[in-house]
Image (cartoon, rainbow, N blue to C red; front, side, top):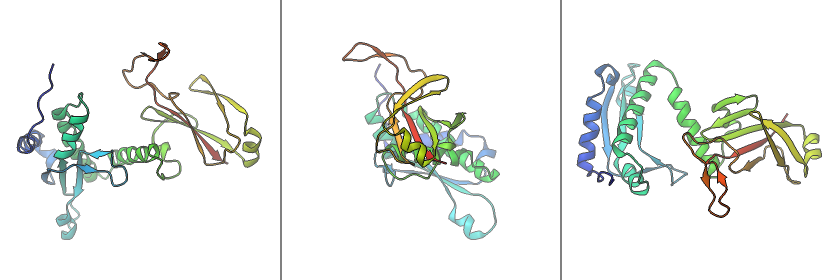
Length: 237
């Protein structure tokens, strides 16, 4: 079944306005405008990461000194178009609705003085930076879901903190580490040049993606689950 054609900018902007008008008025209190930009919006450090929308505090409200929270929602038509072009399963209209609701939720949380979505966005940003090999704040993955002591999930990736003193790490270099993670046995060889603060990555040893099914490896025909990676953090203590 062919997917719907990509809407023009004008059709996209009209649809965005219609979806916004359908949101109950109390939730829109303080939203000054929904601005639809033609261009794509890329992460400043990760050009492969596209931003669909943003909620920006109103500069006029800040200048007035009233203390009221007022916001402008920005949507990036070009980002939707690029993602739809590169991903056949991309539901542009569904993503547009979800993005508008997400940004309005940011506004509502700003009014209430809570940070739930801000923390989620910060975690997503840090995860993307980590995957790209860029600098990340120490312990950023602890904002993910804590599954058991020293084990955190960020999307399908697992981050496992192994707390070692320098002498303990020295003794373990070049040896096989055996441990249980979420009740399952896990083995890892600690490199001879491993250092405290380093993160060791084991591909495919993380969590299964939601709804993932076992797929056959093309070379061996063996079943292999679609899973994230396991990152062993050699944390000092």
